[in-house]
Image 1: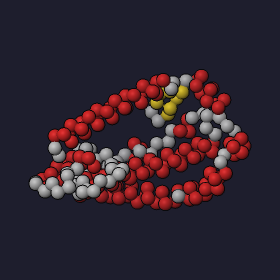
Image 2: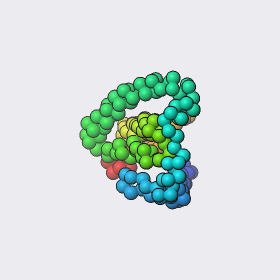
Image 3: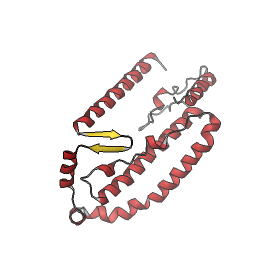
Image 4: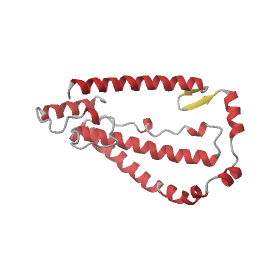
Length: 195
């Protein structure tokens, strides 16, 4: 990897740190604190949220008809998602210790905290729980696959691809053959250190 790319990656990491700080500052402005797994709003904010909540019947009448019609299709995906979750988790559980790869913490990706939002009714909270599971599962799976790719084949593609995972930019350039085996071993050792 050339110096320019290393410099840009360092800038990206610094920007990600700035983003985390800005998000934490936003949390303070939104009057909530995270205590363990719980999210707590100030009492005045909770009261204001409760006033904004739509009751179920009002929500049902004002909801878009296409949302109700496609609901069974959307929620039918829960079975394949759960199977995927089970398979990927089993793969990681069985293989990562053999490879010496640090396991991905599921709880870092699949987070259920929207149920603390008082302005959502029970159906909206259910929707949010489903989406949090599906989106979180995709992030969890992506990280497991990224670590697998780093272990077996940390080489960028010749063609540009969209939606690369967080490790991809650090991979070897396509065609970078010098000391490939030694570099591959460095990638593998880094995975055992959680990198």
